[in-house]
Image (cartoon, rainbow over all chains, first blue to last red; front, side, top):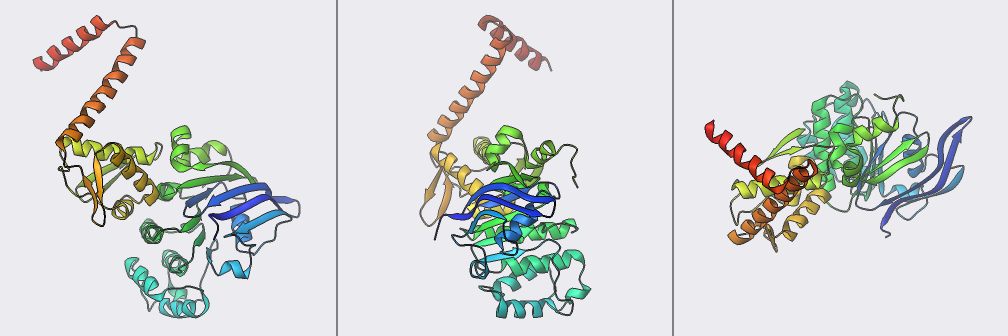
Length: 237
Length: 132
């Protein structure tokens, strides 16, 4: 296994006239929790979808855990898409049963422990869940997989503060299990920025700044301040 | 400023400053003040990381720094402990005092104060405090 979790070399992607990624060079070492920050439309989701093999680059090379993205690499990746939903007629328990059958390396015992930690009722149907409850379910389905790479696209958006804290606690459990690489994009920077080992700032599909979190703090201040400064006048939530 | 409590330890984290330095500084002060006793066990990296909601790598970095300063020692299989050596803590206290005085002197000199004037400032400050 390589020490590099993610490597992008000169990766570009266009959707019609819109440039989503523009000659992106990114290297992420294994075992890091990485914040991927930037305003809407910066290219974060495209970047993640590319790692999960859902989007092909127009140019450049992407490697994830030493492989090209695709179904084989995805055995080792848990990916939570932006605004992810679950089958409305499944209860939490049925979702776990499904995950046990279809998601590689899903650990049901871990999922049940997290559900109890996050106060998520096993008999509740996804269709009847609040946004926060469903977000917790989606997070558990990712984090309960014993895989080396987890990718979370906006795991906190539209979620109440209590659910957010519970999600952070579940993430902490996962991170502390060692040698896990986690990529998180979020606008709720304040809640999670202390979890980041390093941070990547994207804007207009380009890499604007990247570095070790404490080194960036020494030089520029908090991650939230950096995003504000990089995108002054740009779209911010 | 986020305030977080882990066991008997209270931390205030300022996310605009390096976090590992704040952990080192606040734990060192807790040791110097005697909030944590000599030879006492401190939280594991995992416990502190979870309590502070901070990446475990940062806590590990802080613990390595404290060990380098001789404030803590790791006992294999048992965890991390505050040094039981009073001399070490005293040496660290002196070193910190030296650092603070150096900073203070540099600042005063940059304001144009001579050594005699600085000493005079300290004296009059002490008198002020005694009067209160």
